[in-house]
Length: 237
Image (cartoon, rainbow, N blue to C red; front, side, top):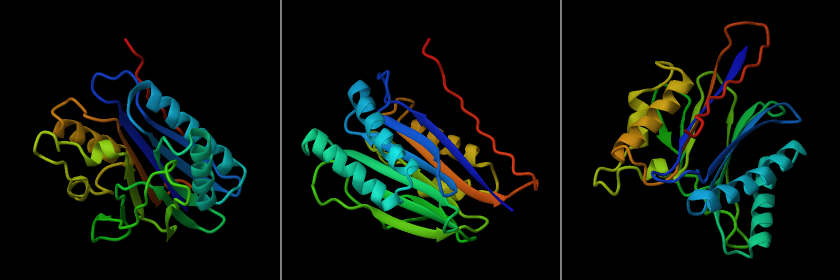
């Protein structure tokens, strides 16, 4: 029996109270789970409001049984019509679809994601697409992988990809991921470590909102199908 493990680690831009990145996890009506990551244009409260509106639309469509590609297109059409093509957001949907026994990665994001399914290590995907909301005929990039033990997927917002650039020492997410490859650590340790390394690349002052979503398919330790969810959220002091 396989088990789905999902971990999220995120922080906001330095000197900003709100993060423009929003992450939602939803159970699929046909079985499985989807994780939605939205990075709203800009930063702060306006970006947060935008990303929450977009993620809410995507989650609603997923709950209605719309296929992931249709969810991305429908969410794009909604944002384009609502904001008249003047506001953008990136959208990532990572799904474990039990109806097809596949992991589906649907993206409107110019930042590559990373995947590993064997001992060769993490590798960057070439499947990228433009953000939603700007151009009428924008389409998502979609990849599909069979549900197999050892499949690990990492997606993240552009704050991770651009970490260290302003300091002259660009962060290399794929090099870090290969140095700390599962199963040497848990999926949460991978997400936490990747975020921590990106923050350190920005010398402790993130130049943009940062979010890491990591998903892994591992052998279940028990035959009893117990589902667990753990959330840690710091309160403003």
